[in-house]
Length: 366
Figure (tube, rainbow, N blue to C red):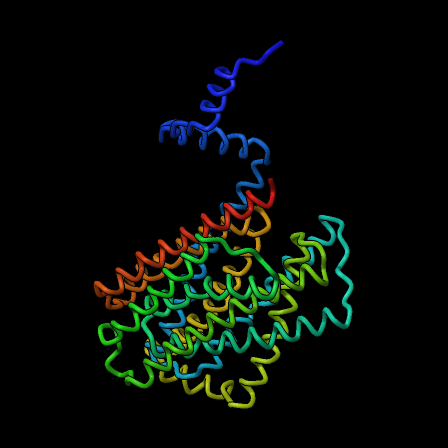
């Protein structure tokens, strides 16, 4: 049977013609259907745990940032103390880890020499990272420090690309450029939010330490992922908790050594006596700093396990404006037009990165 060339050309035209765009109403309907299907695949306990973990990220992390600023605003001086409380809550994670061995019937991951050395290095880097952020919160408003810390996404993407060989697409590169521009806007508007008792040099140092802390945070994130790829080979909930406990423990050890060397444990007595609100307020600030920071870490760990890195990125994107807004309302941080613009641009950068990450995951899974 002879083929009709006119029919063949018509088919080619039909195949080459672009498909009509899907209406927004249909897209929303399809998204709702997929969300309902995903909801039915998991038990209700899964969604309750995910909700609690998300709430921990969105409440605990901003709270710990504000408490760091409250410590310095009310008479606290020590950078090592704030670094110490960031890792002093590691036994809380250990208390959650231990029951998983009995409930989930899992066994602890064998500790090889390479794995122990990796945890020691990550613990040392985490201690240094917390110290850098402590300097940032000592000299910068909480809203500004939070916005600058959002640059950790840029360094996480770059370190992941060079160390773990993660992919970068146009949307991710666009996000890196956008967030970098947002940081530049804050730098240009430095005079609008500097505290009167903070010198120009201290403000600049706080700015630099915040960026360096974000860079180190990105490196820690990439190295943690590399440990899973090279040494652990699996990423179950208890394995993630094991890494968090070990890294926090070694970070606690290094920070405690710093506290002893600089005699900051003895200095707590003087700080508590001179703290605005008295000794009780001083103790409450430190105790709640320990609790909120550890709850934020646990929430982030659970979100990564129960959902995905994309959803964790969404929550991190939401956390930045929440911290800034809370700092303005509760701590009366100055909020200039440039800072608002930087906040919007940062949020846009997060959205671009999340979209790029989603596209990369779909391409790799197909």
